[in-house]
Length: 220
Image (tube, rainbow, N blue to C red):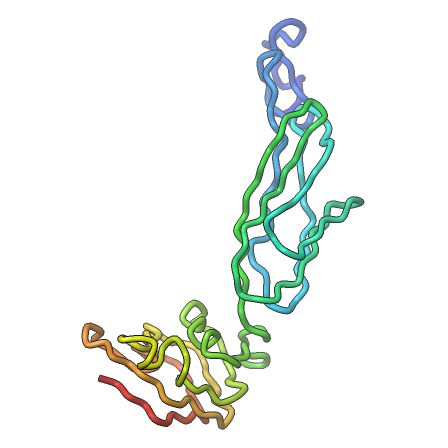
């Protein structure tokens, strides 16, 4: 359909125009902005993220492409490849700006989620938990496999009694695997009378939790 030959009933001399292979017919003098095709929307902490941008100049050739919004991300001038290694779990918004030879500009914005664990979330290579923040992030990946790499102590954390009236928010439902690796979670504090099912996890269903210790737990 993106060929003039497909529209034999239209006047492409005075009324209509088309960019062969790229656009549908449009009235003369009307121009389409360049199109940035979707960008890979998931990265992983401490692992290289690469994605080759694809930009379609609908009416003219693409004159320039630039990026902003993601600290440390680079764009290759030769093949439009994005390169980035996330060092934290923040989820930035990437802005891709494309300008064609006619001066038409497109701003494409894409939020990139960052998986906050090393590992792959499988039994052979489980996601590695080293901090309480990562333990809390399990709630977003609750069907995956995890391994605790060290003891975790809730004292002094945002969930301890001194810093939070309610304490830890239970992970609502866990269906994955947690291998404690002979480590201990200490001083877990929960004060959530409005929550029916409470604990480190609210519900454990078809899950496996092994070799994990709890000490100094306070739940009310």
